[in-house]
Amino acid sequence: MKNGIIIIVLLISGFAFSQTTINLENQCNCEVIKGTDVTAPGVTFYPADLGDIYINTDTGILYFWDGDSWELTSGNIVTNKEFEVDTENKQLVITDSDGGQVHVSFDEIADAIDKDEQDLANVLGEGADANGIVITNLGIPTANQDAATKSYVDGAITASNQTIVSGDDDNDVEVGSDGGAFYDDAVLQSGVAANTTNITTNTEDILTNKAAITTNATDITNLGTRVTTNETNITSNTTSIGTNADAIALKEDASNKSADVTLADDTNTKFPTELAVKTYVDGAITASNQTIVSGDDDNDVEVGSDGGAFYDDAVLQSGVAANTTNITTNTEDILTNKAAITTNATDITNLGTRVTTNETNITSNTTSIGTNADAIAAVQSDVDANEIAATDAIAAVQSDVDTNKAAADAGILANTNALAAHESADEDLSATNEIQDLELTGDKLKITNNSAASEIDLSGYISSDDQDLGTASLDGTTNTLSIGIENGKGTSVDLSLLEESSEIAAVQSDVDANEIAATDAIAAVQSDVDANEAAATNAIAAVQSDVDTNKAAADAGILANTNALAAHESADEDLSATNEIQDLELTGDKLK
Image: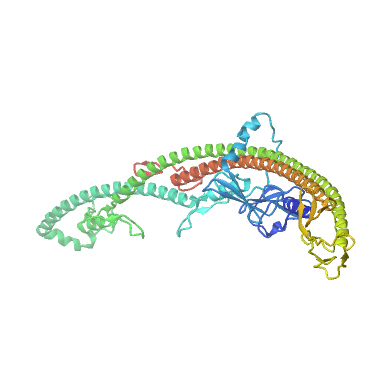
C-alpha cells in the first residue's frame, strides 16, 4: 500500500510541473506579446531574452523563453494540455494528454473577471505619461479592431492613391517630376497667340479689301459711265468723220501730224487731239482691275457668285459659341475643384492631426504594454515562487512519507521476522492447516496427516477407558483455540502472540494521513497557479483591447482620406494644381 501511495504522488507531481520543450521556429501564425517580431514560419528566433512570450493564434497556446529553451504553457505551467472554446455550449474545455477534460462555463469566467475597463485616453488623462515610447513588433492588422502600425497606415495611404495620368493611347498628359499630372500647353498657347494675331491681321486685311472692293466698284461704275459717254462720242465722231472726209484726208499729211504721243494735257492745239480714244479707255479699264481673291495656298476666302471675295464664318462662330459655353462650364468646374481642393487640404490636415494623435496613442500603448510585460513578469515570478513552495511542500510530504515508510518498514520487518520464526516452527503461514486429525490406536496418539510425526504413548496417562478428541474451535475475539476430549476435560491454547493487526492498522492510518496532506498541498499549488493564470490572461486582454481601439481610429482616418481623394479625383479628373485655371474672352471676332 505504501509503495502505491509513493507512485501516485510521483505521477501527480510529474503531471503538474513537467514542461515540454518547443522549437518556436516550427510554430506558425505566432503573434508577439514580448520579444522579437515573428516575420515568417521556420525562422529561428535567437538570441531570445528571458521572459519573451509568443502566442500561436491557431491553438491559443503561449510559449515563453526560460533562458535556454522555448517552453510551452497553455495559460499556466501545466503542460500537455489543450484549450478549446466551445461556443455552442459557452464553455472553455481543457483537455490533458490522457484525455481528461475540465469544462468551465463562460459565465463563471465572466463573474471572476474585474469589469473595471478603461480606455487608454482615460488612463493617460489620470496623469500617466507614455514618455515617448513607441510600440514596435505589432502584427499586420486584419480585423477592423486590430491595432494599425505606421507602416500599415503609410502603405494604406499609398495604396489609396488613384491613377493620376491615364495610360490610354494618344494621351498628351504626362507624369510630372512630383508624380502629379503634367501638361505643358506652351506650344498650344503660342499657336493660339499666333492664330489670334493672324486672325486680327486677316480681319484688318479683309476690312481693307472690302473698302477697296467698294472703291473699285465705284470706279468701275464711273468707268462704265465714261465708256458709255465715249461710245456715244465715238458714234458722233464717226458721223463727223464721214461728214468731214476732207478733214480726215488731212491726217495723211505729215505736216499736220503731231509727234507727241504722251498724254500731257487736254488742249486741242494739235491735230489729232490728245483726248482719250475708246482703245485707250478700254485698256485703262482693264489695267485698273485689282486682284479680289488671292490664289495663295490655304486661303479660305473664296470668289462669290458675284465675283467678290466670300468667306462664311458660320462654323467658326458656332465653334466659338460652343467654346464660350465650354469655357464658362470649365470655369465653374474649376471653381468647384478649387473649393474641393481646399476642402481636401483641410481634410488632409485634419487627418494628419488624427494620425499624430494615433501615433501618440500608440506610444502610450507601448508604455502600457511595457507595464503589462512587467506585470506578466511579476506574475511569472509569483508562479516561480509558487513552484518552489510547491516543490518544498512536496519534499516535506515526501520526507514525512519516507519517515513513515521507515517506521512501517521496521514494523513490517519485525512482522516478517516473527512470521519467519513462526513459519520455521510451523512450516507455513496458513491458519487453516494448524488443526490436525489425531488418531488414537490403543494407547498410542498420532497425527494422521504427518507421516513423519512420532507416536505418543498415552498408556501412562489413560486408563483402560478409551476416549476420543472432540471438536476444536477458535475464538477470534480472544484468539483462543479450544479442543474437547470425549468423556474427559478439554484444553485451550492462547494464540494472541501471533496476532499483529494493530501494527498494520497503525501503518495504514499513517499512510492515509500522508495521502490527505499530499492531496491538500497539490490542490493549494494548483489553486495558486490558476489564480496567476487568470491575472495574466486579464492583463493580455486589456492590452489587446487598447490596441484594437487604436486600430479602429486609424482605419477610420484612412477611410476618410481615401473617400476625400476619390471625390476630388472624380470632380477634377486629376490631382494637379497647375492646369486648373484658364481665362478665355471673345470680343467681337477676337478670341483672347
